[in-house]
Length: 309
Image (tube, helix red, strand yellow):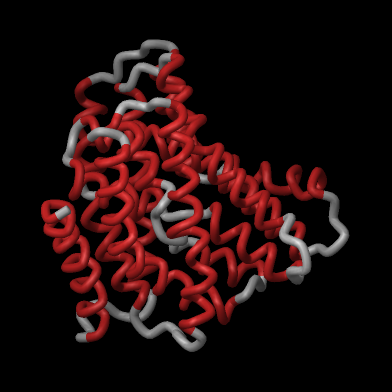
């Protein structure tokens, strides 16, 4: 546990640096959009293309990816079916539980706590397995929420166009495609991809700190209650799934960590675009991001002890 806690100190420092840079005026209002754009369009896609193109997508790999996405989809569906809960709150629970910060927070956490190399490769595979399904379903729910009465199938058609332009989805498809056909990426291309990818982990955390500055953080207690489904319920279910499936310790630990990451920062962008709980999203992201530093260490300890790692 001590080593994991020590490894999270750089995470907190990087988040704090981003917050302090904004507070001291080194970065101005709106600079977070430029940082987010670099992460979203360059660093994270480069990391995903590099890691996935170098991976062997065997049946075991596909099983690993499927075991990551199943708990997220299950908990999200359960949230939608809760009895005697208002429709608006059910949609909020479903979206924020499924739409986690796998790439922006999960990959840095895995790198700092479990190490580079194989742990980061597994984290990238987890992103490839979980993100396409959960992002697509979250967008369908947001489209349906905005247009009351719109059938999910009609919403899904409208979402396809958005997914076709999503750089993370495109990079996952490209990286996985290169792996499936056994293509060897030339060194002149793989080297800059690796260089860009190495900037993803630290810059993602600095960007989170910049993003958290100056938000409206009223109603923190309700945000704490709502974030428990993402920080406690989902990783807990993932732990049971990987335990029953008999995954190797490292693979199981990575999936538990990735499904215990905080609510995705990009949820704030979607909430503005869709008029979806604008006043609740910022406190949710703050509480889940800070809370995840504690809960992820606890889940990592549980995974190491329970899975034999």
